[in-house]
Image 1 (cartoon, rainbow, N blue to C red):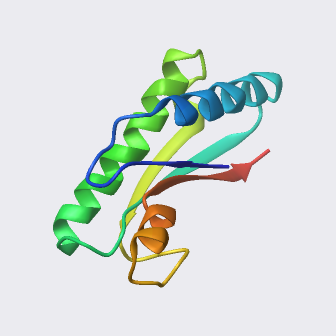
Image 2: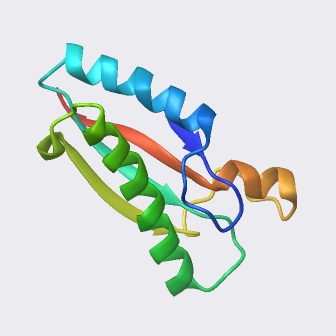
Length: 108
């Protein structure tokens, strides 16, 4: 699952919150599942800035899941900044896809 962010932001919009609420239900129903939340950015900005922003994005998603009752010990975060784009394009459509937090199941 993936949630998306506005340019230069890490706050969760309503659609991201709805997706995370669904994720929280799934995680509560499957207590052995561990998840890595990857923070990503578009190509604009410095490497350092985007690593920091990506971490804030992943942490915002993690914190919301914790607020919904998911055990923090089941959630890890990492930031890849702009290093792992899903769309290599150089336009707003590509950038919008790259501003994200991706959820990876690490164990069950």
